[in-house]
Image (cartoon, rainbow, N blue to C red; front, side):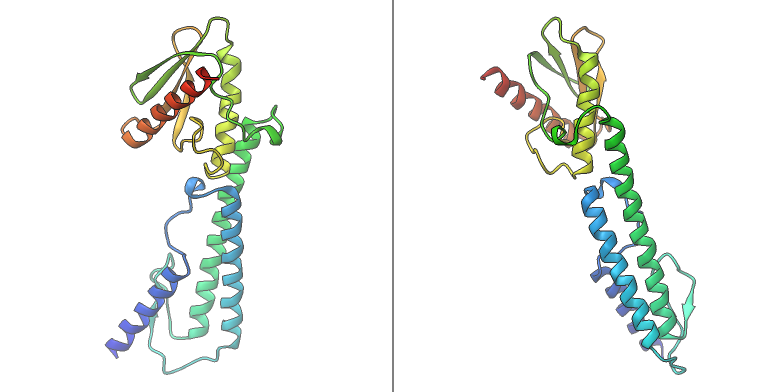
Length: 223
């Protein structure tokens, strides 16, 4: 009897893992908004399938009580029909989490890009008349030639980052604005702003920012 319970639990755990579902919270930056929508659709289809299976199941009085390995820990069932319904509910909630994540990404892009048409958001607006780049703690300081309105540039730069975030940072792998986890701020000196990692201890992100800024500024200078 104990062996049967262990076998059932192992089977349930395997089905959750093989379906790509998990109990951790879905985060917006896990993927693009489009991918979140696609995953939500897949989870909804899975929920519908589980519900259909539950409707076709007949109660099995000889089935031993088993625990369900998801956020409903503590619930048990003696009926395979109930097991499928619980799983359907889990998938439905997981789908809603993906839809919420997609909505957050899309809302962030719309907010940051109010003045820029969607057709122009994918381009990398960065590096124009740069005269100096300097490594700082957490990233890079970029200085433009005199007369450049850096304050006017920052909203545009934040818009392109919002677009990159909503699209999973997939479209432009060389642009300094397509680095996950970076932030932008005006510098204390005139005509300059800073691109820094939101986590200054994340050395990989810092190195990626510095590399892309150097490559981008060199390319602009050679035009």
